[in-house]
Length: 190
Image 1 (cartoon, one colour):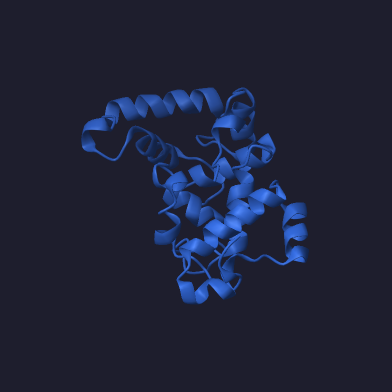
Image 2 (spheres, rainbow, N blue to C red):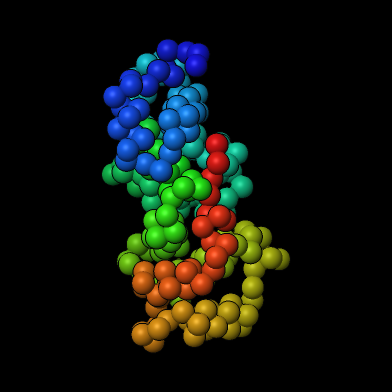
């Protein structure tokens, strides 16, 4: 596989395969991609290193994703709030976005990504952030306040089963279960 930073101990490889939805080949490829993003002097200690979010976002698979910053925050176990990732964080992210991850796992993480304030519900502000991510960063592509309010009202009418003004995880999963394309569209392939 090349450079000294790309070797993965066999016992760890087996453990990672048991704990993720990834094949051995996918884990080895993920390790190589992670190692390539590390400075050369850190590649031998790849398991102890963390990649800053800025490096992770250089991956073409994330660069075009409108939720790239939230994805890094959700999968990062760092206390720094910056979204840096260890190799295991990186593997967790790839596992959830793999074709073999279950719809329940995918919807759970999609919910966490869309819950911008991390309060366990999707409220009007979360939904507004979600729509803005999907429609683009520019002012010309954003919905005006009336359109945004109407869209959020429609989303809540359709999704808020208990009528508390927010969407909880079970309501979100119920809506996602009615979208057969969701699991195949929620993926990152290295």
